[in-house]
Image (cartoon, rainbow, N blue to C red; front, side, top):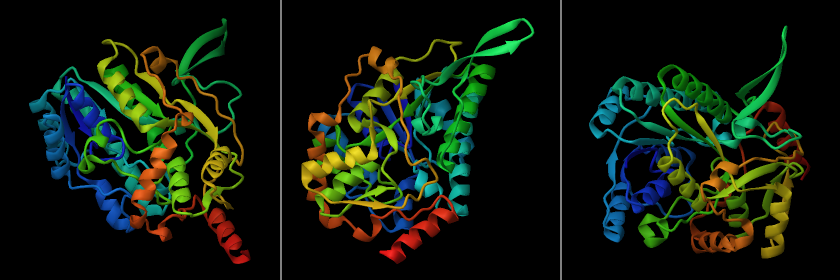
Length: 399
């Protein structure tokens, strides 16, 4: 299949592009390298050294014999160029990672909120509009987030995108199926809930084939493909804006930095290893919805854990200290989370779990590149509101 990977230089996009290429798909990455520019803005680099995109692609051709194309294009801004590219390439599928992906970054300031909304919503709408304008039969695979469901306790297993309800009418109760009610916890999550509405409309109005993947928090760094050469290594973000919680804990333990648990640590989250992420992307690309089928929503996660339990697990494993800090996020101190993920399991996904020893692999990578860590960037400094910022300042003053 011909596959365009939008945002293919990023944390999930790069290993997904390699994985699809390794399995025989003709892959073209479309990216304006904005994530690298954010590194410059935040003055923090990936813990792992990331080579220039041209060097990455040459290395992949050397080790695999396969070529991945690259187009420098700002999805969401360069609309006509996007239409022309899709018309010329005629892809069977487009994988859409081209969105600002970090909740804390989206909450740093009004400017960051506006950037996230502008970038994410325009990118999604432009891709959909371009597919319709070209008139091509293209399957759009979008990487969304479990965060669209919110992090409250639902009292039931969260279904895969749709909720069956009964509506009271004059003729009695009628069955309906609706999108699961959105409950975004940040501007970033809000843009993902809006993505759902774009998909609902374009699928209903223009019959666009769409798969929306509601992904849990990714942990791990390496995949089968990124391990093949040092020049192919994936990003490892550890800073307070882009680092994911489990990777941050493992990195902190590796460099003898107290693991930063926010609030009580009672937040329950869904997780998935990066190797399972790329496998899920492959399964989604290779199993498109039928023409006329409603937007297919799948929960892309493999297990749930409470944050403080993860910290204790790593503390027991590595002897690391745990530091409880005020929570910069405006969220419940405690929540439960139960999630359905039957679709990917039925497709043959065999999940990688935390119990399988890969945490040590992440810790080894963190130790190897520990000299690249800027310890001043580890703490989370993006606050959801002024009350959260004031609470942190008060705690620091009392320390």
